[in-house]
Length: 154
Image (spheres, rainbow, N blue to C red):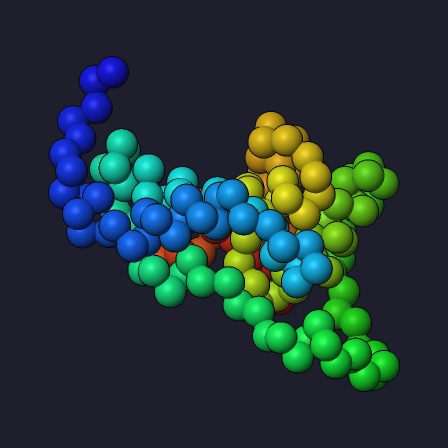
């Protein structure tokens, strides 16, 4: 197929590759854990496209605390942060942006895969929404977390 591939990347990142395969197929809805292909995609981008994404095993770990499920959360409502969405956007686009902002806020980065999972849409509309948000300066690309990762602007 024209790719110049060796086994070196598998040898150097065997644990990461194994865990990225697990994360691509593992769901536990009772604990809020959903499958994600983002780690596998980073590995394959390095393998096939020669990118230099950071492949650290700790990134694949599920961050879950047992007490979060067993102990009910206190009913203390934090002040909700808001983002200004341009009026020119359709109501559906505004709702999607608000849902993404509620899920990620200013501190959590996201990419197309996370947008697809959060909004339950396919790749093309997710890419289109990301482009609209970049053009409107609602989000900006971040470096060091892999290609195509973004944060909301404060």
